[in-house]
Length: 173
Image (tube, rainbow, N blue to C red; front, side, top):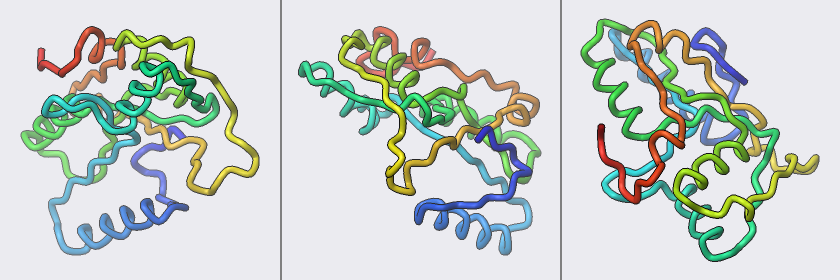
């Protein structure tokens, strides 16, 4: 985890292998290419909450318990912040690979913070460790280092609490 742009991709899932193949095909054909990588995209877009967070919110809002892993890490970035970074990147001279992550968090921490920001009862959220017999697509750490992005774009990632608090639809500030 906490991969930087110079780390060689070593995908283990079919999804990751496809992404790597697409990057390689484009790099072979486009000279002024910019590849943007993220770890986990969330939030409201066109008035709709992303599927994963929406399902989590619906479960706890319905009084159901929800379990999330404390030892699985991602770098969640809010979809509208990601879009702003893409626009800023298009106005720059940068070419190459750039990570656009949010703060590294466990899936449990992220879900707790996001549900709390949306006013959900986080007492229904339970922490758990990834089971030893978990499928291979349960990747422990897909977090990304965003230091290059911050140098190039002067970009500040926002926490789930900052972008979701009190919003039932996202409004750009």
